Image (cartoon, rainbow, N blue to C red; front, side, top):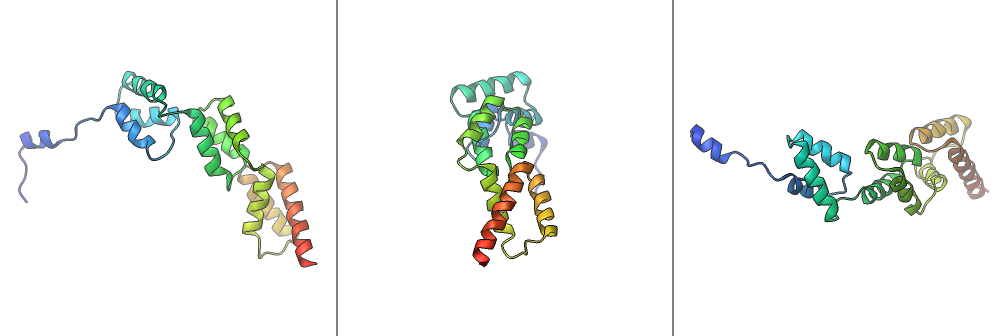
Length: 166
């Protein structure tokens, strides 16, 4: 293989894409928070002024929306995680409290119902012993469900199992 002279290397080097086009490419794959876009563009070496202009352009053209990001993330995570964990993740992305609240209002299933669904999927063939209940309780707490919702879900799961066994 022949080596390229330095003059050819410079012409072959990648030209720096405009920041709003770079972010737009990301947004075509999934929703991103404003914070995430700022961070990623900063890592790629764009100036803060370029980043601010890109964000303004994306928001004004409705390509980026923190409310849409919050709803998307809440829907994706709600199948296996509780509200506390999802809210913490949205706060890490610096999403405003009203947008977080709206994302949870849009969810159709409560934490208690999601915890019960998790229990039914993962504990189907296990005995309902106190040891297992404690293990499941800890697992659901670690997934961001509140202790009250976990207790209610465990009680419902136990009732459903006793009905099917009778």
